[in-house]
Length: 445
Image (cartoon, helix red, strand yellow):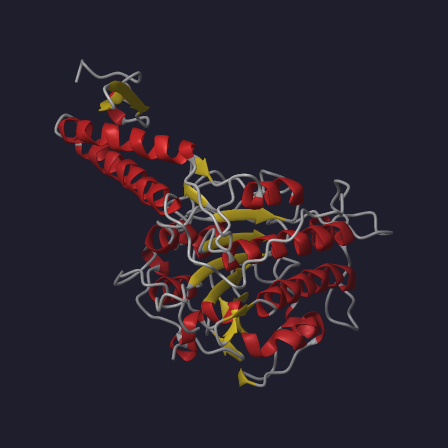
C-alpha cells in the first residue's frame, strides 16, 4: 500500500478532460494507530424526528389511562387538539449496560442508534434518520433536512457517525433561501430548465466511478467497508442529481410563499424559541409538501436545554437541578412550566402537518414523526420512565390516539418499529440490552 497516501483521489475522464474526486480518510492512510399522485404513483411516505430536552414530571405528564381516549394531565394538556393524531409512550428504559451514565447523552443516543455510547462524543452508529434516509431519500433534492429552534448550529441529533454530524439549519431566512431560493425546482412552473451545475456534478461523479473497482482490490477489509459506504453515498448523490434533471410532477400542495418577514433576535427566551420553532416547522412542512425531502429532523430544544423564562434567573437545565420540590404539588413547578412550553410547540408542529391537504387527507396522514427526549424524570435525569411520541399514520400503516405503557422495555423498540414501518428490512436493531426484534405492535395496523 505504499502507493497510497491521503492525497489519493479517484480519477476519471469526462468529455475528454480529467475529473477527480477526493477519497475519505482510510485506515491505509494512517499509521499503526394517503392516495396517489397525479401520475398514479402512490403518495410518498415521509419520516421525521422531533425532540425536546429534559423529559417530564411524572405526576403531571403520565396519563392514568392507557389505550384510546387517554386523559391529559396538566403538563400535556396542550396536546388536546392533536390527541387523535399522536401516540404517547411512557415507561421506556434506555439501557446503558456497562457503559457510563452520561447525563443528557446516553438517553438520546440509545433512542437514535440503539446502542449506549462510551463517552459524550461517541455516536456508536448512524442515527435512525440516516438509516431511513438511505432507504427512502435517495431521489429527492435533499436526502434529509435538519433544523433547530435553538438558534445554535451545534444543536444536532443527526449523525452519520461520531465525526460526521448533520448540521442543522438554525436561521429561518437562510433555511428559506436554501429550500426555495434560486435553485428551487418549482414543480408547478410551466417551464423547466435543468440546472447546468447539477448536470456537471452528475457527470463528474459518473467519471470517477470506473476507478473504484481497482481501488477496492487494494485496501483492507475495514477500508473496503468504509469505501463501500462512501461509494453508496456517491451513488445516492447520482440518483438525486438524475432526479433533479427531470421536470418534477405538479404538486397542488406545494405553495412556498414568501420569505419569512419576521427577523428574530438571537436568544433562548422561551417566546423566541417558540416563534423560531413555528417558522422553521412551517418551512420544513412545505419542504416535504414540495417533495424536496422525505426525511427530516426538528429540535425544539437541545438535550440539557438552556431555554429561559422571562423573570426567572436560571435556565431550564439549572432549574431542574436547583428548584425545590413543591411537596404539595409533587413536582418542580418552574421546571414543569418549561416542559409545558415544549409540549405547546410539539402541538404546533403536529398541527402544521394537518393544515396541508394531500390527496384525500392531509400531509400528516403520509408522515411518521418520532418525538423523543434525553431523560425520563426531569429532576434527577433518569434513563427509566422515558416518554416518547409518534405522530401521523404513515400512509395507513400506523394507528394513532393511543397511550401505551412500554413496561420498562428498551426505548430502542420504538426506533425498531419506525425502521420497519419505513421499509428498512432488518430482523433486529440495537445492541446488548437494547437489542430488539419486538415492534410496538399496539400501534401497527
